[in-house]
Image (tube, rainbow, N blue to C red; front, side):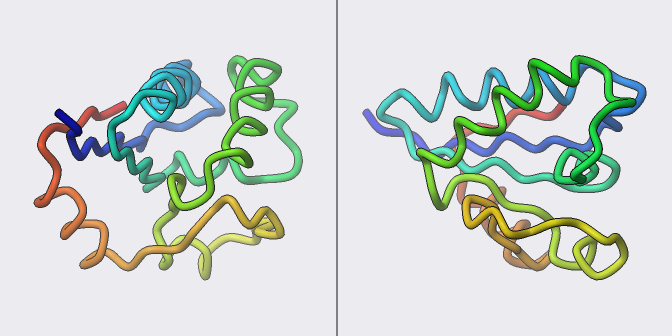
Amino acid sequence: MHKKIVVLIQSDPRTNHRVCEGIRIALGLVASEHQVTVLLIKQAVHILETDKTDFVDEERLEHFLLAFEHFPGVLFMDAASSKRYDFCLENEAVGLLSQSASAEKISEADCFFIF
């Protein structure tokens, strides 16, 4: 049975390894037959910065993020954050969602994980 799964990542990648673990687990779920949405909110949106040298697990994180290019329509960031921070959003694998659209995805999910 296919399930709708949301992986909500909010931790700061500069101080916490949970972001990398969340991305790793999300990739494992994406490779399954389930419908997976990964939402980056709060400090987690910093993983989209071009300079990742001060991140915990920077090498692993960069490797995992590159894999999302093979799964378009899975990775999203909070649209409001894209206006507050200066990110390189050239990567078409990253979509923008409003808070209400994110809330709708969460409410429709069969299960979700928070990192």
